[in-house]
Image (cartoon, rainbow, N blue to C red; front, top):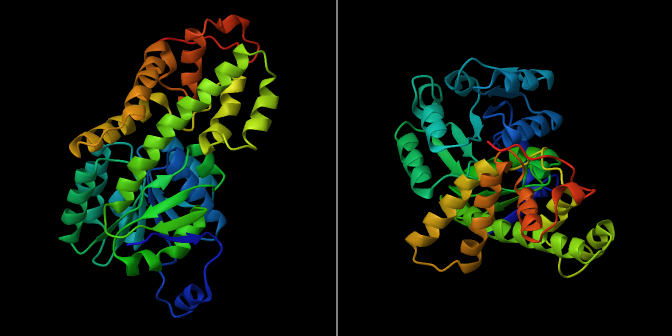
Length: 332
């Protein structure tokens, strides 16, 4: 099925009529997972006028949600009892198992007809199993990964790859518009994850190419602010260059919008998916070593833009002589 893009804030007259007839899923929205991405979703939904009810195992993140004027519940099940639509943003397979199926999980609180907007990047087979287990209890799960970094999520500059029953996705359009720049309807459940894997494959490569460009510019003696201005306005730019080149120029990766250690999970998922299809991914495979090197060199908790530091080291650029990057790397 051809992907359908719906821009945030730009719903059609037909969509507006659905709201008027009461067939759109609006009202209170649950948010499970309040990290970099989930926290941004909650913030924008509050700004759009939604009542947000959230939960996270991290009490500090829950406190931040309360400051936004939202409500925090004591468990995932409690959130599910209060909201017909719940967004999940989870870091791992183990976290998903707990959030959905533990004693205080979603399936023990959500009623029949509940809708879960599942935005995590996890193996496809895991998401398919979750869908089937939830369907047995009358819960609909939508596979809706996000395209964009944490910084883009904070600026509401992300896109949703929504897959699952089209009528349910359509009913959720106002919610997608509340936290994303755009939503693409991608067809049957699972297509969203497949597209996310491809998007992240490109992100992996483009982030490394941005680092190559910055290091070559530095070795060339160019003004890097000029380099950034010129390249981003030409044919050689990419969203990763635009988002991460400033971090590479500054040499400060501490404000991570995607941490190196977390991204290892995404790299593993993409690699396994492509291998299962016997599909060659030579540039992706060549890129992986630089992310592993960044982790080994102590950048595990810093932004993936830190692969630029790996290339700088290879290019013989001492960290102490780089006026843009005086930070000392602390190894784990």
